Image (tube, rainbow, N blue to C red; front, side, top):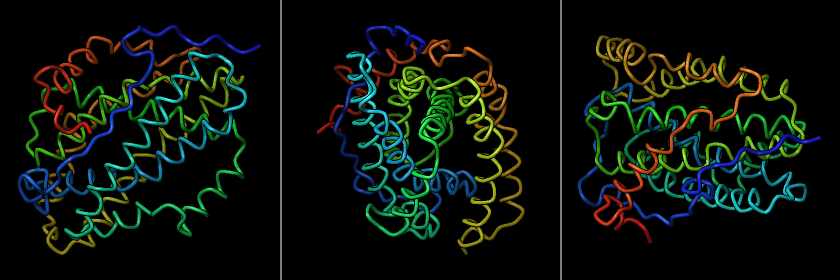
Length: 293
């Protein structure tokens, strides 16, 4: 018997698809190390941006594998919003990625492979080898990871004080906001199709122990490929500051809550934060009203 999906507040029950158009480099040129000269953070954000388009396309495919088994009309509507938001995220990150590649971020080109490319076809084949429920569980775990980071980006004053390219910050704020809007959709699909707690927790364990080591190696490789970043003392200091600072500090403790049995993403109430940022970004005088097509 499938577990019931959680009842969400009306304001966040149906993720809204916003067709965005950011102006990277149009208002002012993007600097090589666009997080105010911070080499490590610039490479980390660049690599995350590079990985978002193919990653989010994989998330969409994982949910679509169960499309015929979703019978609840409310969940169907939420899934449609989730798919629409993730597709726009990938599109806008690709716009940024093109500029990052031109700036010399070679590993962004490795991470952001185009649709119908050989690498995408290889990824799709690999996904088909995974049990459907495991693929979906990995998506739900990744969504919790991104939602946890999104909540930090939108609420932590230390993170918000990090200076960087304004338009890149606008992209990150919008992306974070929508990650919170749809944070429980893949999770609720997983429950609706009788996904087991064991599979759900296993998927998060893979993310929990694998993401930071993988990203650390990727950032090191990206920096080594960037001759303008060959400042060992500066890079070492910035790496230490990253792990001790607000981006990573306390993150693992927050992520562990997902591995408690019967956890649900909406146990973490972000309703007030969403309403605050809905007004900040899309209210009457919202920062991004003119970015919506």
